[in-house]
Image 1 (cartoon, helix red, strand yellow):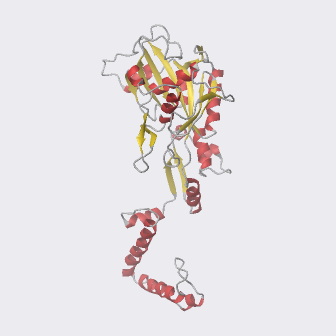
Image 2 (tube, one colour):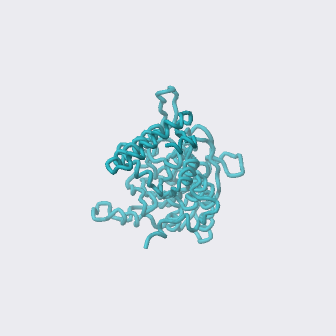
Image 3 (cartoon, helix red, strand yellow):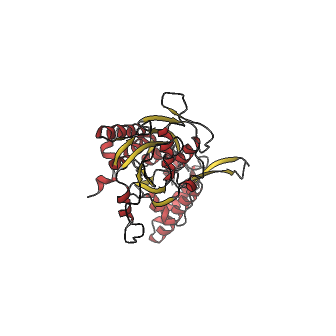
Length: 378
């Protein structure tokens, strides 16, 4: 007590308080803690003070023991979409028919912005490859957008309902003239949802009676009644592609050189922290399996429909970093806590975002610090 007063030790939380009062509290605390029966009381008071401080930062703690557990945390594992990022994706680029395109606009309003070729100001909404890619992509989506009224401001705004990854596709499709009635015009007969093992979603839609996919779209092979569409990770979908859509709407055999060119485009988009999805189609005269056979598993149906695909395009969307995340990661690092991002995104996209939010530092070895889950499996 005497030494503390002599050194003018004050309460860090209240520097204006007298040192003698602070040292009395310290002395009483040490005296109580010296007695074994007083230890639980001291621990409870300490944890209660921690809870009080956390409540001031809008963190609600139901059990005091949770404060102790949080205090001993050394690693934080976080999802990316919607946690480290805002989860509000906007399409900014697309690649269709071997040509790159810029997508204008921001947010979910389809009336703002247009699609144009890279390094050109010419509108490209009527390009065969653009219309074919976006229509095929929408046929493999379950998300819709509509106007809603803000209850606070009374203003109308566009909002998506469904998957955040599909919202920018639906918005871009509306920009080139496709409406919300596509699901009625192209009846869906099969849907295989996305899974972490398949890395893609697959749908089959009825296109009987059509010579072209849509107005201004690619030609369909004679006798086509069903159109299968795959949407998902580019590196997985490209493996199953045997054709690629050309700018004039025709198809060309997909060589290894063409696959490398597409993957280079994917890497270019991913290095800018864009989330890239590949869109591929397959024209069919009938289902490659018996729809009435209940013994066929979902994986068997998927395997039967995914072969012989035609790559029609890539769509690249940006998901902005959430405000405060880079600073929070640095704070955690300063406290000795390691932050790990776990995501199903393409590896290069994950690396770019990890750099943006300070999870990866310039001096880190990306080959060791950024690992695809396939390398972790025995």
